[in-house]
View 1 (cartoon, rainbow, N blue to C red):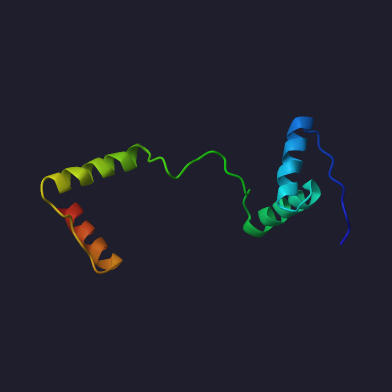
View 2 (cartoon, helix red, strand yellow):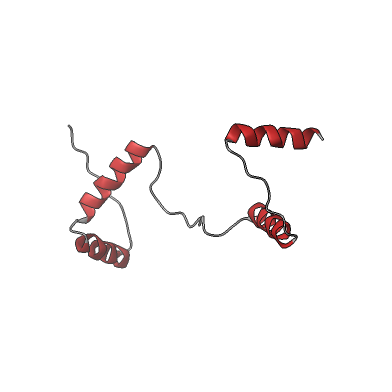
Length: 97
């Protein structure tokens, strides 16, 4: 394997703080950078949390939650299905009506 050198400019405070985090876990910044690249190649994705939280429902999910709460408040329990196929058949029938 031929080695390549990576040079980058980074804020010195950020570098110092990142080095402290890496050291806490027993790594140096070079090792963390190599691990980051390897994970990126392995997963074909950038392994970063870009601030999108799955914990915060979007408008469509909020509307579905509200509709479900209304069904429950009226004493309804919704529908239960034994399989995805059974559910899809029900939904197709509902759309046709």
